[in-house]
Image (cartoon, rainbow, N blue to C red; front, top):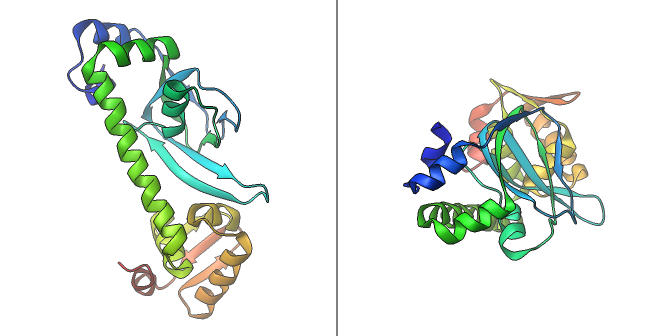
Length: 212
């Protein structure tokens, strides 16, 4: 199976065992876990995208990270290795194909196969680096810069199809702040706002604001 190649030089018995697992296609918009849930398997994403968010007491949401093909979920790894409950929520944002490695198999392979263990730990380290960059951006980055970066990243052609709440979650800010900043961008002629969409009119100015 092609997905096994991302795990490295697995032992033959490990490869055969994992090859026997069946993949499943999940629909877009499916909730996968919530705060307080326990991890029961280690999902390997074959295609699609899962987003993991954290929601504060006020209801404000921030996107922690996304899991795409070949990537792993920090919260799941912590749940399986440290017996920690999930603190965030996760949902599919596209149709997503996954293979789930049951908890007991995952723990056994962590002990028995160095290649499998190395993949999990390397993936965990890479995701932690992503979270550190997110923390730095939220703590020290300018809202204008982060908003411009997100608009450019989400644009399909020159259209961003996302609500203000969804954009706010991606930059770690409040919807009201995003609304004010989008108004300022619109007055500058950089964007045109529409219901559930933002049309990019001056990509050069946005790239400059994003520090690109």
